[in-house]
View 1 (cartoon, helix red, strand yellow):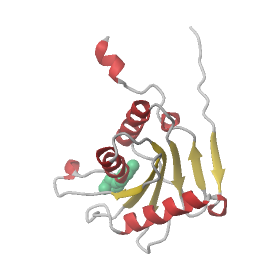
View 2 (cartoon, protein in one colour):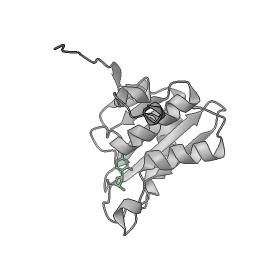
View 3 (cartoon, helix red, strand yellow):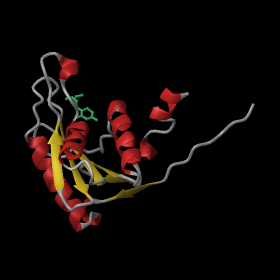
View 4 (cartoon, helix red, strand yellow):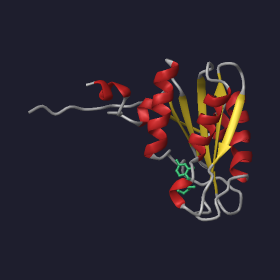
Length: 161
Ligand code: THU
């Protein structure tokens, strides 16, 4: 028997420490969250991506009366970017959540497992790391790569074995 250990490194920072591009992403993600269609959960998520070609795109969660038909903000933004610019990699993804007063939720909200699966596959497709920033009211968490959020990912390699 052997006990293994996994270690990930991530940065904790304040809103003041966001770069100009990150501030722009936060603005776009916030505006997206304000447009979320979340009449069932009232949980409004905004995601914004910065592409290697300079474009910034955003998305919000889209719910449906048939609950599983809805889609998370992260996947709306990432699929939108992949659909519009399939050749351009996503350098940074920023995610935030607004409360009922349009204020940021105190704690950064991590993406769900299904979104992590999509983020990591997008990252491996584009062959360069996707930085992920989770923005709460009091703190920002920054991960250098989407794969940091999902160790032991299921990949297309598994299908070949
Ligand atoms: N949601 C997201 O948009 N992103 C996540 O990573 C977690 C959950 C949405 C889905 C649903 O519309 C609502 O938040 C409550 O789960």
